[in-house]
Length: 369
Image (tube, rainbow, N blue to C red; front, side, top):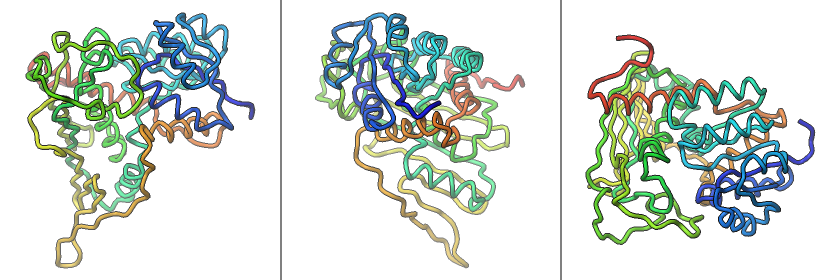
């Protein structure tokens, strides 16, 4: 691409667009020009356009793509519609910067990447857990061989009460699933990335809906449910609409013989702060928060806390780093960090966990029995 400004359009005007994608693009003012925002509600589209100084608002996606001719499109809609809008943008000649998870199913994700390859465009998924200083340092340490053979890991993202109540996260027809595909995708993606992206070959999962489909009458915080900022004019929420899991647990087998345990929740009676990520290796272990190497020093056991740069306390700062990286990729200055085969590995694992939960048995993802 030339050094002219990259024209970016936004599909979806909900929380993650207003709090994550748009501020991330606006931070790159020397490289990026925001040219339009689409939402099925023209009122919401206009609200976001006016709030962020975007010149055009649309309630017709095809019209927007044809009129503003973006170089990049941010897809910020509910999970089930990612495929529809990403394919439309790719076929209109734009690269796609897609919110996670890439799609509702592995099949949809594979189709999206096939279209991107056919059109000669990049489909980038905002797996922003990779872009923290801690995750980057953990990958460097793991990749150096200091852990030895990494044979087991566990990761969890557990909210005591943190159901997203401002949109349609809790409705299967729009989101496909609950915390497993909302926050579990981040935890699993970052862990697999740190471990070198070994392929997931089998999944055993269980899902539960035990708490969130009831009105407990609790005073709850949007920040606790993942929305510290960016919620404007949210739809009315009812626990009676809730039809996705509120907690999930899973066990994954990897092609190299290693295994992963995963736990996620939006609503569970767990202690505050419970969770995190730990990797076990033959030479040492790694706790990701705080980043700590667990090993031996001579004849003594020792834990070494790794000092890493502190990330700015900006909401959704991972999106800022991801957008900056994507511009670098488009300019030919950086190699793509989030790759097709890695994204498909993660969405395949999540797909497998849901299928396993529905069938009550382990499912193979590699054609095995």
